[in-house]
Amino acid sequence: MTTDQRDAPRKPAGETLHLVPEPVWEARRQAPAYTPEAFEREGFIHCTDGDANLLGVANTFYLDDPRPYLVLVLDLDRLRSPVRYEDPAQIYPHIYGPINREAVVAVRRAVRLADGSFSKIV
Image (cartoon, rainbow, N blue to C red; front, side, top):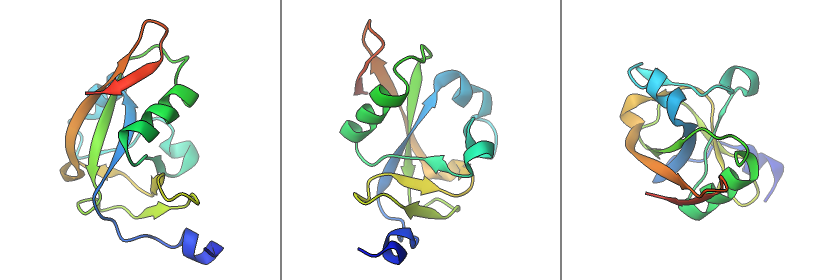
């Protein structure tokens, strides 16, 4: 795959997942669109395709954050912001703009064990 192919926007299809601290989601869920804490700094929203992949991300990057986490299930066809799969495996889409409410089709819970690790998504 060439760099141009990898960096080109992929037509959104199906669903992807976004991990969010529960207090952040609760504070912003009534807004017409959602942007995470790091959006201003990073310029895009991190997502992950598949529960197992998301648990891997959570345990790699958020293990030391004690807050409870939720998982937003996003319908890529309903997203208004551009989506790009920029990773070689094509499982970590970036959303270049806010997540409009209609794209959030479910909110699930990331279950944590006593040691803080993420064990499953319910």
